[in-house]
Image (cartoon, rainbow, N blue to C red):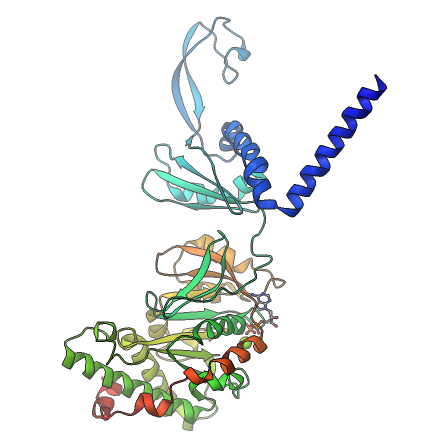
Length: 445
Ligand SMILES: Nc1ncnc2c1ncn2[C@@H]1O[C@H](COP(=O)(O)OP(=O)(O)O)[C@@H](O)[C@H]1O
Ligand SMILES: [Mg+2]
């Protein structure tokens, strides 16, 4: 008897240790084989209670039948006094079978009459607590359906490995909360705003971008008016670098002139953009990286007023027309608001890619993310200082995501810049054109 007991206990202990080790060493298979099925059963089994608690049910009239009139237990839900009775019951929205994801699960819900996805978004935090998960995100693939995606733990606590980029002008710079890649693709979203407080990870993201773009047949241009401390080490891979106001005025003029020339080229070839040109004559795409956009607008004294106005117009011009002519902007800054100067609001409107790192005040989040879902703004303000590189990202699909960039040190970026230095087209080569005639016209239009 004692032997059997000891044997059973030993077997149970071995089982527990085995499961613990499995979970510890290969969480993904453990999650798929053990964790997820148990979770899915629990989620389905408790859905009525959870939906009721989160205010997602509706009262409906139903006929109920009981053999024992008066007993609450007869239905488990309502008290039925007669054998047949019409009663109001709480109906839960229909839940489809949960499906596992890398960091949790996802399930489709059929909304009840009168419900909208926003009702679920508002209940997201309640759902997360009821299910004991890190977060629940709500999306709606089509009318009448919402998808609840639960993430068990914050998948952005540790993000590693920058995969090599394969497509032209497309870089995987980090991971999304969903476990998917965070991609910056200049050909779908040509211009990006990258906002955040100091130490929030803006420069890290620029580094990741630089490492991804360095091996590609493109030109990189830098604007770094904080004395060039950020971008000078990457100079080997930069075709041009402006570190002072005078230099930036010159460089922007060059860019506008270049655009005019490319415009002429496309016009003569009957192409709408450079991608419709034959590869042999297609000009090299240019990615313009700006660190601390505010510096471009900062006025030390009145004498700089004209220069700033010129800078502002040129930058806006590039943003408006750059897309078709292969000039893409990546603008970083702590605040990218109208208080910087005229033209910034218009510039912001041209940037459809938005990245909001940790910010100090709600206005900056609103300014960066625009009138996106209010939940995105709440999420942006909740980014803790301990996780630099975490950001809210809005791109082409109108959706927003929480994401974290890969950690890319200055040394790594510098190394990439030196390694691929021979791919750097020289600025003279890029701008060796005679299409400057259009320049005044473009700058004043
Ligand atoms: N994705 C990341 N993962 C881990 N650490 C990061 C990440 N991004 C930034 N950091 C750390 O945060 C610090 C500040 O980042 P940085 O990019 O210089 O911020 P900013 O340019 O916004 O001031 C860096 O020293 C870096 O070590
Ligand atoms: Mg920085």
